[in-house]
Length: 206
Image 1 (cartoon, rainbow, N blue to C red):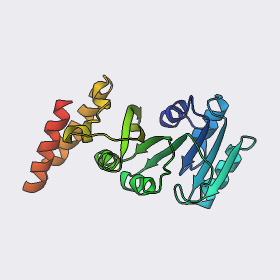
Image 2 (image 1 turned 90 degrees about the vertical axis):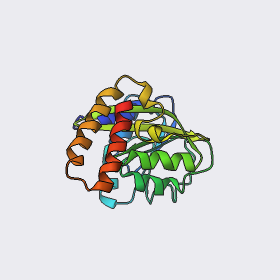
Image 3 (image 1 turned 135 degrees about the vertical axis):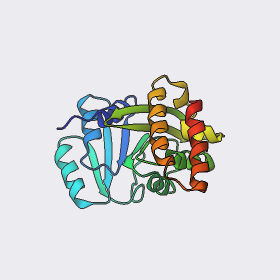
Image 4 (image 1 turned 30 degrees about the horizontal axis):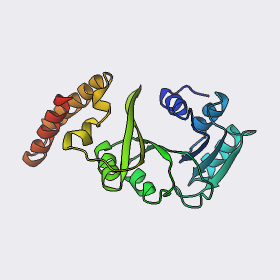
């Protein structure tokens, strides 16, 4: 099994939870590590695609796992205390969260892009960010831990992260974002340049 800091970190975050739902489980590697380390008792692995679900079934053989071919939370009848939605775009994560259950549970969300879109959605749909983590695994990945609740986020919070900005490891990530924007801004048109300058200023605050 190939080493992935991102996957191993997600598995670490399942500690202290018992029944975990992994949406878009792919090959089931997060759950497998969580079981191997004794972090969780049982799990649900769901995916829209047949092929990765079959691979997950092999990787999770002999573990107490329900495998469901479904879209997000649809057709998941069991209750769970942690849901993982990782490794996909923010818009897709938002679409999946539209069908999130009303019962108390914790959500681990790891978008691959446009994290401000996800934070905006959480604020507007009565989710509260309770922690944020940063993992560098060839790329920077931000992981959000959220529960049902209310929060207000400023514009800078949407990009920097209300909790992430308090953590020392965020500095390198913000510097990385600044360099990315500085490369793009040179070729941008006037309107886009104004947007990017605003974004640049936000990351410089971090």
